[in-house]
Image (cartoon, rainbow, N blue to C red; front, side, top):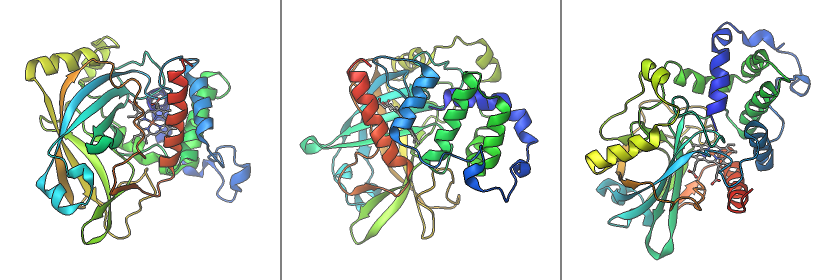
Length: 341
Ligand code: HEM
């Protein structure tokens, strides 16, 4: 969902740099501050604001509307088997249904800019599944669903001519936790291919351990061939749609694309409930296995709901307040799109 938002954010970036948080009086009560985040946020609120931003998109996902199916294979590492107690790592290998996508609910999203997404369904023994769905940014635009909802609502108001980018600047100033994601994204171009970027799970999850309490972790996928961004010239010269074709070409040329699946392990005191803040850079990382993309272009992923709360035994969601909202929003979106709404 970040594309349109990133666009609007980019438009105000220069002015934002000069804006001071002091624009909102410190002693003003939160409830009368028009730039405070909404006090509550439900999955339905998100579905409604996606409709305001993107209009009716019957049959499409309400977030990450534009995307392409792929298939592949997961092979767990010996370290994963040793350290964590989950059927996810009990397999020699597991088939994967994957979907690469563009952030945002626009089925014709411009692929030259914006975050890419990746959903993966691990097909385990006994008809069990594990799901992950991540982005090419490691941080979320908000410490909770309310902050992110406010961003989308201001963006919709700007689009409708009911607010100006200056309002969005004031919103960011009143919600400084949203700054980390903006800072991380500054100066980075979008990835040159769907498979030439890291993907990040952003939220914390827990994994059972054989002889200890469950371990909090965050995951990322790292392409073995390394990351590659578009050049500034390519951003200007490319057509708005090129990612599906590049994926097909890549698989034709190399036969496959391999990602390392890496988990970063929390230490005591690391917050598990704030997706807008990274853990310190020195945390231990474990390579959990490889994820290999082998083909693309089928329609196998279309009905799949890559709900990140649907996890294998031995893995559990953290107390990150964004996770349960995602779960409900994805279910609503799946129901709508499979019903051609
Ligand atoms: C309040 C926060 C969020 C809301 C309301 C939301 C909503 C949605 C919705 C409605 C969909 C379409 C689901 C479907 O029809 O199957 C979607 C897809 C997706 N979202 Fe989110 N999302 C949120 C946060 C996130 C975050 C934090 C990430 C990354 C960590 C993420 C990654 C994705 C990806 C990769 C897809 C595409 C999955 C696919 O290909 O089916 N979203 N989102």
